[in-house]
Image (cartoon, rainbow, N blue to C red; front, top):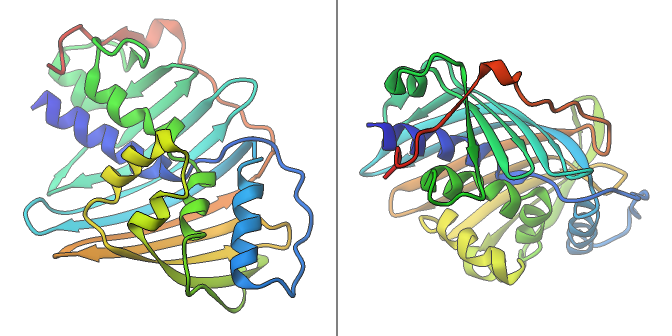
Length: 273
């Protein structure tokens, strides 16, 4: 039961953070006459330079055996002065099993603080937060496995995936949260797309996309060359993914604080074994 709860919670967090960004931007307005594929290539380069941003996400999944699920939430992200993220999942419903009260997770460096009422109830924990060291693989293996994706799957990586498209095209200019952006649409083959990533990220990417074949995407890119919205849709043998993410606040200051020490407990060793 606990292992399932942690897996569902962490997997939900991983889905939301599957589009986190990399490092600082010197974005310049893109040229309107660039081919769609060139725009995506420039976007991939620019997102790799982003140091902070905010994302709102809705992810719907379905599987013939495991049922349907939904994750909805938001995240603050920064890469400097150290990697940090603040994830709030208002809805975590996977395979008909929901997490009452949602999920909150704060990452600072190699430590994650998780707030899940169902987990606290199971452990008999009297403090609202649980602290887990991601560097201690023997302490909480499954939490490490999933939340490690914060570092492995970022906005830069997702943008690299779409550069594998051979059929991307511009489909017009639209407003995204009051800002003009050019809408590009296309598909990418999963195996070819994964090869666009650094070698150390490819295995995890294959695991995340294992149930999908060709993925349809829509991406809205503003004049500074950075995405404002990304939608991914894929299916294979009855399994489906439908994800929409909205990005804002590039390179703006974010405030990510760890919970007060007197509200934090430890996850007992061997809990997830």
